[in-house]
Length: 509
Image (cartoon, rainbow, N blue to C red):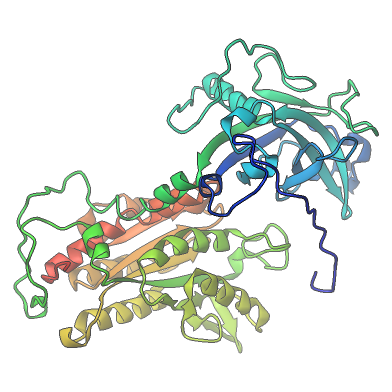
């Protein structure tokens, strides 16, 4: 699209409300407010594609390149004799004959299956495609229903021993024991892929692959909203905290309380949020060292194309959108480290055109502008400078005169790095020093890629007295669940925030 292109759109009349029989649609109707979405994750195995493999000669061996694959989900046409209507297209998984795609989030209204009664009669078609030389060719497809996708997920959970009834809104229909036409095996947890004939049906007996439902659950928009609101507010106190314990502010010059001690018990993080004066300041530092690889090369850490986010961007978005809910200014500094400018390695430099970025989207935009400069990815990986910069920022919050403060400020520094840090011991000492200085600062490090993060894990497991206010999370352990990544990374922040304010005698109003 950068050089011009065509956007294809399918437009059709809004379907009638099958539950009420009304043909009109209102934005204020209860059905529009209680939209349900299907969370679906699929895996394919044994994809047949050998008749079109590209051969590569390496030495005396012939290697076969694997295809890039994606899938489409379609629903039947609105009129008889029409073509299937594509409602979802997945991102592409590169070079795999057994791809596992990221979880898809699909509005059930696009299947015309907003009510539970529609799930058993709502047909869907799942087609697997391979990409070769910018051309797409179907490997195979299967037809099923929303209800059978749910049942297949439940069956797989029982087979693998990881069933969780609380997280799956499963569909059960008495007497439904038949295999689905053209698709599933005897266990009903997989579907056979067959090539689509010219008439649009799966008339061929050839099996071109197996499709497995890894996860399928349905939730309402209300449930999604309630879950997102539980992130930080529900993790503010750990199990060792005593709800009724008294508060003993620190007796030093910096701990003069400017807020009335109205609470006789330890307040919660949610109490500070409810006061409307809490401001979480978010600082982001990004690794631009050469170990990330050439950002123009597919498969490297900073590579991004066709609107798909790389791991750095996904981590920023997952954690940033959660922090943003607790920030009043939403002005965040974005720093880089490890790149060479003008022949000199910079362990701290500004990303973007301004000192701060507006919101999470601003952080992503500032990150992307770095690749439009004359940056040369270099090394070594040194993070002391960005740590000191965040500490200086948090010190300003701590030392500001009470009369000049209209908010209760606390700083969270997110460092994203792809490997071994050359100054890790010095960094650990600094984090511990900042804790002793009672700075309003928590440090979160997210490891990107497949490097050896053993030292970070060891630091993460250390006792709080020696660890400091530090948290490490490995991105690839949560890459398919952004909410879990955010929850794990920010787990300690609410408790550390409350501890800081209590130590200074600052109570929520």
